[in-house]
Image (cartoon, rainbow, N blue to C red; front, side, top):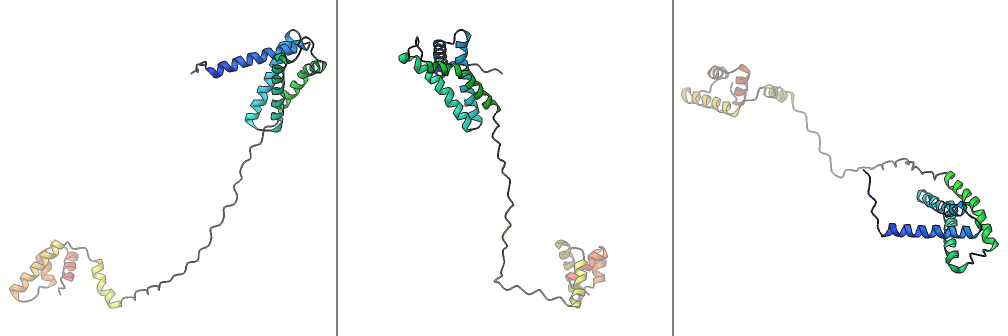
Length: 217
């Protein structure tokens, strides 16, 4: 999508200043003996060298770019000042004729050096070795708790059936306890594990878990 160029004060000012500077350089070259197309080529040469040096300055600030930018600026500024009535345009001094005649060679040298100057090398940052993590010594101020004593073999044997027994729901355990209490109230003796198993009608492993929790023989 093309962008439309809107005229503003800065653009108009740049066009006017460029036209006046171009005309002053042409008049000075014509007064110094450069007639015809040569007088029109001088302002083009000065302005191109000025632009080339400025573009070089934007990419890298080297000393040669500043030098050629100053030379082109002095040539443009000098031509504008010289045509302001301070110089007799009908009788141009010899040293000015020499400067105007030697400008093409100087401009060619400056343009060639600006174009073929090596670009500044980008310095790549090489990451250094990472610092080693400092060693931290830990000193415990509290007294470590002693390891729990191993259980006797008899307790391990007694606890192993409960550990391997299936989980009994609380409602089923309450139901079995009510059956055991009713049997005690009726017969006056605690109910046995076999009798409780027959009353419940559940798998043997579940009845054994219930009898173990009710501590039935």
